[in-house]
Length: 267
Ligand SMILES: Nc1ncnc2c1ncn2[C@@H]1O[C@H](COP(=O)(O)OP(=O)(O)OP(=O)(O)O)[C@@H](O)[C@H]1O
Ligand SMILES: [Mg+2]
Image (cartoon, rainbow, N blue to C red):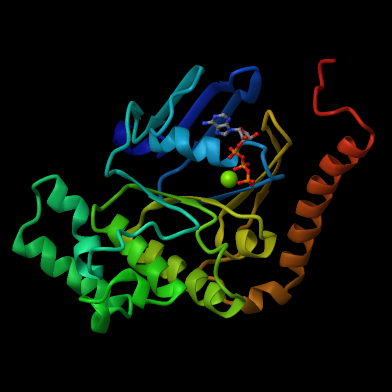
């Protein structure tokens, strides 16, 4: 295989990240293969968003290296699309202008790209809303527009920080299905943060359970049931086994805390 293709899509090696006195990551490593869907779960404040921000290039590690597509990450780039819990669309732009914003800002918007963006929005069920403003869309529709805005740049990697966290349960299920289909069609690598174990197990090839700060991987759950998985997967023995394991790993973290070691393992 071509060397560039055999490289992981995302690689963090011995990364440390501190904010002042606080070590959020210490000697943290992660490799995500091309086309893989990896979820990160872990206690609030453990460093999940920090990990995503480093891969996105929004921040630089104190120590260690972060690579994407075999190249060191030095700044944000269209090869790494980021989606947050809030869709973060420009409220004053129409849906189609939001989605074509990236190529336009890079002076790369041509009629073909624009037609592609419109086709994508039609496929995403937003064909009737091209000229609407984000505020006129439901939460799920806004999130689909935000995903389209990122995909129009043809990213290799999608970085998603609790993207469905603000959606109601029904919409969330539909969006999970939608994202699985999107990945099937676009073939991108996905790093996905969620607090919802069911969501992580339904969608991922691998679920990484992170410790409290400084985050390290305490368990890795490989979910090899074929994808796309329908919600029926949540009723299987395979799912129950994985979920129990994820809970055990997370419980062991809260047990650590209740024994009062205030998170300073070296004290
Ligand atoms: N730019 C920053 N400056 C200072 N401290 C920061 C910064 N970014 C994150 N932190 C701190 O680093 C720690 C980890 O934050 P992070 O947002 O990565 O956690 P998280 O795992 O995403 O949490 P949550 O599940 O609540 O979103 C927190 O204590 C946070 O306050
Ligand atoms: Mg976070």
